[in-house]
Image (cartoon, rainbow, N blue to C red):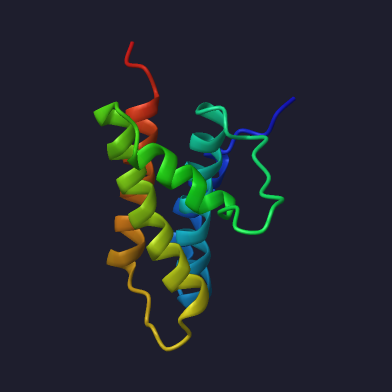
Length: 122
């Protein structure tokens, strides 16, 4: 049975509720990875593994593939995922940054936007 990456989004919401910098930062990271891994798998990029010098890292490759798509919904997903990745990088690497609850809410919102765009409406 495959892991449901959406569970990371549920965890992101719980971490946001717990509060504090460690939880806020972890929440943003989980929101990003929920969206990233789902998009990567959904668009058939799961098996991509850079192996040659100059190959782009998988995160950049997935985002660039979507942003250069001929389909507007794919480009929108790529843009949102890129914004979410920037937020995750800031939360993970900028110790001097104070992560606010509002910033966490925006990350969770963006992740939810991606799920809404890739989930067919019934």
